[in-house]
Image (cartoon, rainbow, N blue to C red; front, top):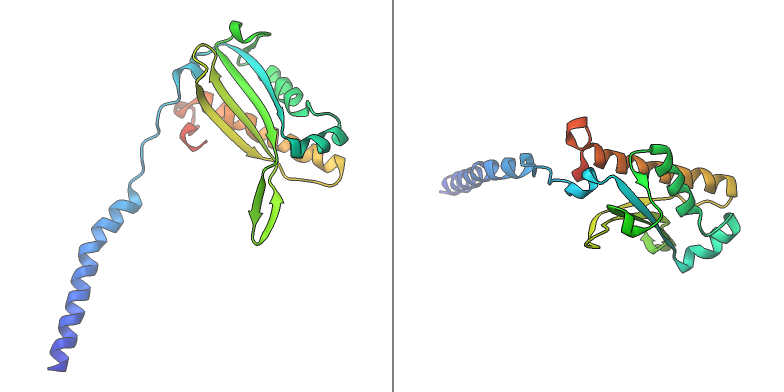
Length: 179
């Protein structure tokens, strides 16, 4: 009798596992197709770059490191070097507005509160003022100015790589949906 009960329990568990296997497999292998990149980002030709500044936490550090406009200046130079968009001097003359900002929000790492410096790039449609896309790229902190400059440049480089990947689209090997 006990052997029959054990066999029954084993059979029930085995049948349940078999029934659940196709559901689990379907959930693990299903990947959503990439959503389209807003047309304005890929079709736009003229860009105004807006300096959204730095947050209060970061302001003192930027003043010591060489200036509160460092994110704006470096992003502007990187966009100019890229040459993909014509940079214009007024939002009314642009198809898109690229708003660059630096912040250092308080984040929890393990059991310790610390700051998480990051660059944020928002892409806005200049006519509707709607936000079309946002990138956030972490910037590793540093004590020494030379290390900070290297880490900031690395963060800016990653931000530009994400931007180029988005504009290139899926046909060029990029995956804009992952940004």
